[in-house]
Every structure is written in C-alpha cells, then in structure tokens.
View 1 (tube, rainbow, N blue to C red):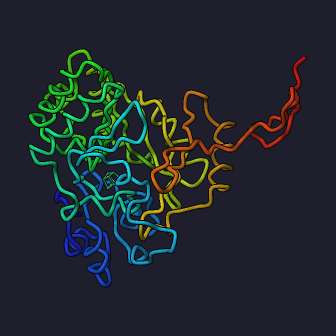
View 2: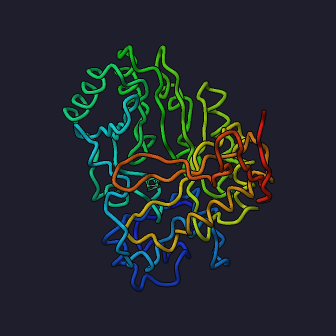
Length: 346
Ligand code: SF4
C-alpha cells in the first residue's frame, strides 16, 4: 500500500494509508513541507499508531503548537552567513548549503523554516560562484561541509562540478556531506553518484542521518556498503527523539547497526528548538541518563557524542553527563551505573 509513490501532499498521505483523513493537516502542510519516499513509506507499519518511522515523517497537528522558546533559526545559521549559502561559524570549516530541498521532510527538522519547495531554494550559479570564491579567499578553511537541504538530491553532474571546484582550492582538505539519502532513497547512491562525491587530493566524509535501526533496510545497507567500498568514510548523525529512539534498547541497537555497517557513530543531537517540535523533545537530564546507560551497554566503538547546538549560533557543546568532579589532584569519577569512585593519583 502506497509503496511506490513519493508522497508530498496530505491527499497522498491518505491514499497511502498513512493517515485516516487529512483533517487539520492542510494547516500543517501550509507551514512545513511533506516528503516521504517510497523506501520510507514501505518501512512504516500502518497498524502501529506509535510506529517510530511514521513519527519522523508523517505530519501531525501537534506541529501547529509553537512554544515560546522555539525559534525560526534555532542554531543561528543566519548570524554567521557572510555570503548566500555559506555558514562560517568556526575558523577551520564552513557549511556550504547549495540546496534547500530534501527527499524526505523530517517533522523535527532544525531547518524546517528554510527547507522545502517554499524554502530558500538552490543557489543560483552566481551565488555558487560567490560561495566558492569565499572559500578560496579564506585560507583557514580546512573542511567544507555540504548540507542544506540534502546535497545528495543534486545530480552527479552538479555534485561533480562543485567537487572539481573544491579540488582546485589547496587549503581545503576535507569535504563532508550530511545526508539522509543512503537510508531514504538508497537506489540514488549509484556508481556515478559515488564518483561525483570524490575530489582529487581531498578526503570525502559522509555523515549518514538515521534515527532508528529499522531505517536500515536491505537496500539502505547495500547503499552504505557501496559508499564505503567506493572510498567514502562514513560517520553517523542522529537526533534523540521522544517516541522514536528515547530508550536505551533502541539507541544501543541503532549505534550497533551503524558500526556493523561500517559507519562510525559521531553525533547524537539533542533536538533543536525548531518551531512546532516540542513533542519530540525530552529534557537534557533524560538524554544524559540515556547516554550514560549506553556506556555500559555497547562497545566504545559504538558511542556517539551527545551534542547541543547552543541556540543563537554559538556552536556545539558536548553535553554527555559529566563524569568527573573535584580538583587539586582529588577527583570523583562516576561510572556508567552512576556509582562514584575517587581518583587521587600521587
Ligand atoms: S533531511 Fe535534514 S534538512 Fe532535510 S528535512 Fe530532514 S533534518 Fe531537515
């Protein structure tokens, strides 16, 4: 049911059996884009009202509730944007946002006011020229992070054009892509795409965004394997989401699934204060308890870093529960079970 169409409207949600009726959802759709790929639609259990895949992608009227602390630009991209499409928050790296569309639209998206058909669009050729010129003119930029939107919606030809231009900039050594495509549209990851992601003399990293182990269908696993075998280094990116992965079993399984698929767990984000997303947010204390429990459950290789993007554009902070207190040579260290031990070397 609904397995082959790319769902973009409330009518299509009803036709695919993902919602009983569209009542109230048109108001949501007027504010925030809808997008569910056939691969994701096929993973949704229509008989489970709490299905964690549906919760990430199927809109609900809960999104119409905006709280006082939520903001249009939760991580402060605009405050650090010297030219269109560039965010320069830290000295050694920039975001290059070439495109503001995605194959899916996550209901908790931190850039939900910027992405979608009515979002900021794709950079024009002259805007892209200016963005590349900015990178070329700043010799401190070591890493370029292509995000958006989802950069893998671009054709291999367009991606190659960008990579060839980055290859010409001697001080750029690393190009990193942030994408959901290997999981939500795995067939897109073909040989032409993988070749296009690489640039002579540079190393390509790709952060795969996934939040639940069930997102790793056989096709997604195969796409990930093609990327790794093709010479791309993979890291993970997830968001801690109420009703999706806010229990230790699911989180442990997700992180182990990443490692088994040769993706090094990297970031576990606390959800940002994006409008209409309060139903996804747990408290930081709850998140820290989960992350501490993970330490006792799974290998160090599978541990992500729990991250808060400080609202207002002040960058990322590691908010994993602090495990050490004290000073002057005498510390108290807390283990994964919460038991305290003194550490006072001579
Ligand atoms: S794929 Fe990323 S940018 Fe696109 S809607 Fe999801 S979280 Fe937002």
